[in-house]
Amino acid sequence: MMTILVFALLVVLLICSVPIAVALGSAVVVPALVDPNFLTSEAYIIRSIISGVDSTPLLAIPLFVLSGAIMAKGGISKKLFDICACFLGERTGGMPCAVILTCLFYGAISGSGPATCAAVGAMAIPVLTSLGYETLFAAAVVAAASGLGVIIPPSIPFILWGLGTGASVGDMFVAGIIPGILIAFCLMGYAYFYCRRHGEDKEKIAANYANLKNRGRLSVIKDGFWALLTPVIILGGIYSGAVTPTEAACISVIYSLVVSIFIYRSLKPGEVWREICDSVRSYAPILALIALASAFSRVLTLIGAPAMLAEYLLNNFSTRAAFLIALNLILLILGMLIDVGPAIVIIGPLLSPIAAALNIDIVHLGIIVVVNLAIGFVSPPFGLNLFVASPLANVPVGALGKKCIPFTLCFIAALLLITFIPAISLAL
Image 1: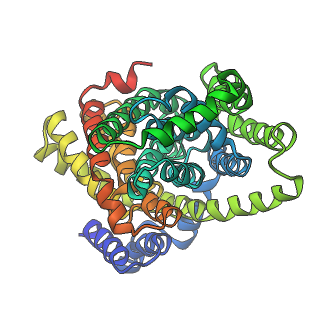
Image 2: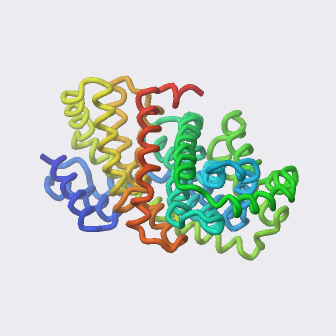
């Protein structure tokens, strides 16, 4: 009964558009208010909130946010795009595919879907529209492909999943590589099909490609070399075991400052403080959510919610396949309503015991969860990437959401492969 009351209150508050942090905090104190004999006290809740953010791996999140912001200000996304366009620009659908590849590479810098959408979209949408592509299509390509920002490592949701379930963050990063590439190829396949069916302005595309070619491929690659080296340094350090994800995040900040200020000279030293302040503003809500979600998960454990949920799902979905299908449907709906970060910190502790009972690898499950929630970035009514890309292209959010439907179907097709072929996530 207490479990139903806690979740009912949380759902009602979320439906009423109460801030998620406030809704979580309200749900945390309900058991003690209803039952004076309940094990929690004010001191216990406060300790749970503090311990929820007393974590060294958690430091990686604001540092990756800051690194992505500095790289965006330094014009790194434009240099990555020029390299991709230099190799794909003359092919059918080559320019939209270049945008998707740019999102893939930039995701390996920022670790955030909305950050990737803002950085790549501000540069790529005007370029695509100037080449004759429909504005809605250009915005849809960016909005959908920016979901790769939370799948390709380093990924902020992967860090949150590790904190909530005990999974290795390094293993999560490694596991995200092949799924991210698979999804990118699926999106590129639809972009090629769309351009082949609807046609392209070959003259404008040829002229743009000629400008890049006149610069010389070697010159374009040389100009973007330091941008390309960013994910190599970050991920190479993690996978080689030389640094932890948190230490790699520190290195990414220093590297982004050196490249943007001293090599590309696209960022002035006086602008760094503003980027730090903006990153703190972006991170503060996440930190509050993590702290309250930690207390929320402990209260749920005390009232036996994980065990009850595990028993219900195991009794009604006794096979792995049935459970995974039901889980995907639930997560797709959840991703439409809640942002990926809050969703992970809430459901992660609930799903980990179920995964153990069904012998599902916790890393594989984490990839499934994050890919599902990444689809929510372009799913109405609260798809965050839709709201980021809409003003960049000056198009209505509703129309952009409809244009993203085919890309969403590509995401789902890749999701099904990832779900039922664990080797895609675990091969590395």
